[in-house]
Image 1: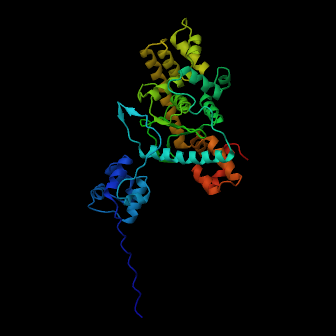
Image 2: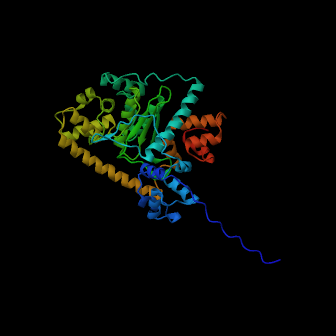
Length: 406
């Protein structure tokens, strides 16, 4: 019997992907052939190869196509479709820049679609529990007086003058989130897609969005923003829920950049009145004090930043545009320095919040507790609960400790 011949490795099969889909996916992910090639460097893919695939003059191997789909954040099967799929998100786009409508990035789409799935599960859970619709969702309209809406929000969230004194200025933001969730609103915040650090959310694209729903309203905050702006965005999106209007916003409250549609303007006015009521502001402002003393005093009283007080002062005729700009720039330097220190701590993994705490903030404490309670009562499978929370099954115990469940 002669020597056994070694089997030769078979050449890998070619993936007959649709060039039009590749072009669509690259545009969706905001990638050029050069940046996509860098992302696929482990496969040793050149920019020219990607251009050939896009032109239809060449095709990737099966494993290259798998990595291609992964790099473009699309399901592998999409590459074989005859035309791009419709990815409609049932949420009005309220963003414009210089009057131009914008397209959702892959990151914003993925976050929004994921949250829709979470909201659907939560809504069905509440229905099974016999929970009644929340009375404040869609309670008012655009024609309702701004102060009436703001007062109703303050009353519902327990944010009236005496109640907010229980929070220090530093704890005010977390206190606002807690009060919103106590009222039945899921508040989620993140600066990236899930726990993927390579997919940050673009602050220039959006600052927040809301899904209005009678049972399960949701507010999402872009965690890349300054905390002072996040506070305003939170109440802005809460105002959307009181008006029964879902939408994604890119309003910059300090620089005036963003949409000027009626709904955005109204929610902006409501948020300002909720956080810094005009009547109390004018009563507390002392014309015998200089600007800086007034701003410092009112900042402590209302538990908001100097820039928010200065903005309100400008709107109510107490300080000029140039004075506001000076206060804003001074605050911005402080915020930038604080962000720089936070990034340094993240690199050294010292002084930052635990990964479990971050995940709870991303998913909302209320949603996390509800899912875990459903898992522990054996109404929901462990695997399903873990998928809903974007966590490994063996992590659920730590998440339960984080939200105070035994």
